[in-house]
Length: 68
Image (cartoon, rainbow, N blue to C red):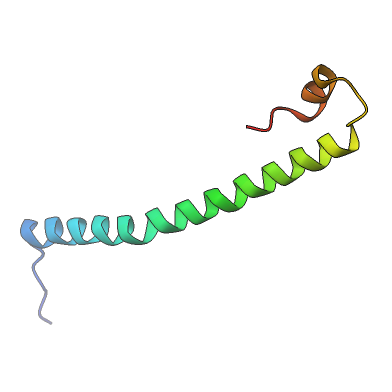
C-alpha cells in the first residue's frame, strides 16, 4: 500500500487557498447576515417607539433603547 507524503509546501498552499476561499465566501455572507439583523433590530425599535409614542422621549429611550 503506497502512502502519500504530505510536504510543508502542500500544507501551506492548502492553508492559503482555504483562507482565500473563506474570505471570498465569508465576507459577503457576514455582511448579509449583519444587514438582516440590523433591519430586524431597527424594526423592533420602531415598533416599540410607536407603541410608546405618548410617553416622554426619556422614558421611550429607557424602554426601547436608541434607534442607533
